[in-house]
Amino acid sequence: MLTVSGCIIYADDKGADSGADADVTDPGWEDDPMEDPDEPDDTGGSDGSDDTGASVLDSDGDGFLEPDDCDDNNAAINPDADEVCGDGIDNNCDGGAPECRLSGETEVVDVADSIFQGAGTDARFGISVGSAGDVNGDGIEDVLIASQGPQVGGHSAVHLFQSPTPGFVNAGAASATIESDLVGDGFGQAITALGDMNGDGYGDFAVGAPYASGIGTASTEGRPSVLIFTGPMSGRATSLTADATFEAANINDWTGHRIGAVGDVTGDGVVDMLVSAPQASVGSGSDYAGVVYLLEGDWRRTESLGDAVAVFTGEANDSRVGMGAATLAGDVDGDGQNDLLMTSPEVPVGANAGVGAAYVVTRSASGQVDLGYADVRIYGRSAGDNFGSSAASAGDVNNDGYDDIIVGALNSDLGATDAGAAFLFHGGPSFSGPLDTGDATFFVVGAQAGASTGFAVTGIGDLDADGHADFAVSDPAGFDGTGVGAVAVIYGPAVGNTDIEDADVVLIGDAPGTNFGVSLGGLSDTNGDGLGELLIGASLLSPTGMNEAGGAYLVRGQGF
Image 1: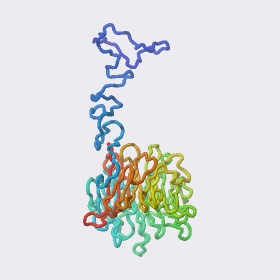
Image 2: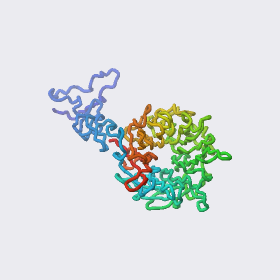
Image 3: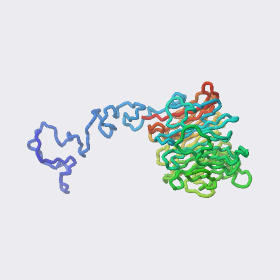
Image 4: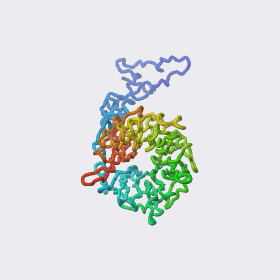
């Protein structure tokens, strides 16, 4: 075909008359008298554009055009392709990979990427687990696992594993181990990552030792109940090397039983922390209402609980607030600020003992605050349910822009007598005032009488890459009468209810009596694939030749 020098063709009709009398069917130019009628029409899109000027070329020749083809430079990636699990690519351009995610009932040893084991007999490694943050500054999240030690004469310890690798990992190979210098102080019962508290580029973390104040000898007087450690670190150390410490306000008040980093809720640019003392009394005498301290970072050397920004108190005698949780709720009201979550599994309601309650504080607080006036108050169903025995932020499970919370009720009768349960509550504008378990949007119940569903709960991020946050619920007693523990994984958006044995994923422990699921920890990403991860403790696991050495399992997300 001949072309005419100097001719400008407007594919989007910009050369047409824009007046009110213009013929909208007029293409804006006269027919070319020199055009060969057998040649393709230059105005029909053969130039690789549609009538808007957008490209319609199939660059990789797979028969699909953008935007349906999410990678038009790779013919193996298109809407008709088969998803290849584990390659990190959305092969069929559908935005998800449900066929790749974990599902059904499976033994944890078959899906765990890393299996941690205690270093010796009676170590009871795995009694608590969690994130350490990035302690060594390599950009990858590290892991904390505590060992309780022998019940008689044993020292507890916290082990740091930096960027854990797949396979079997012995506690003796930990990047760092911090051992308590006291016997029986409960060091490691609570652990939490603090982020980079002091701005040096390394992650820091806190450890609770709730029984330190009650050991009751002259040589242990004044020993700390909360200890702060700053990164980087390696090798072996004792609790005496802590960079900052808090002593309990009173003997035997269990300060440090639960601790939780809550981000910067005071607005000073530094991380803050909740510390519970569930055995503390608020009035005169022993009322055991319990207290939770809101402490403003950063912390250096010897600190005082008397400097707390706020002190939250139980709403009634024997509430023992902070026994179940004192942690981050996420942003449940969508105001861009982190909210606080605390529970009292022993709180009575009327004449009914042990009903339990969970409290969410969404507004700034200072001074002494009675949790009976918390912004959100959720109560259990009946006496002895112990609603609030565990609790955690679940993330945004239904993807509505508000974070949600998951609350365990260890002795709920909803599924069977004392079988336990866990309840999901969605955040949002209507999440306020007094509520009860009937307001839950989802719940999982135990499947056999006397089980322990809801013993531990945790958010686990997006485990299956579908854009919804997921969460986990444990039952160390299991559901089939054999005593083999189980952990249920529930994928968002999570609607309705389920028995623990029918959850989206049911991870089964190695053997009876291992305490599988005694602790749970949600990890954001230890391998850089962007998927959520789950850490599970089994403190009574007995590897060959090591009775009750304990163990833990790291299960990573599976998506593209």
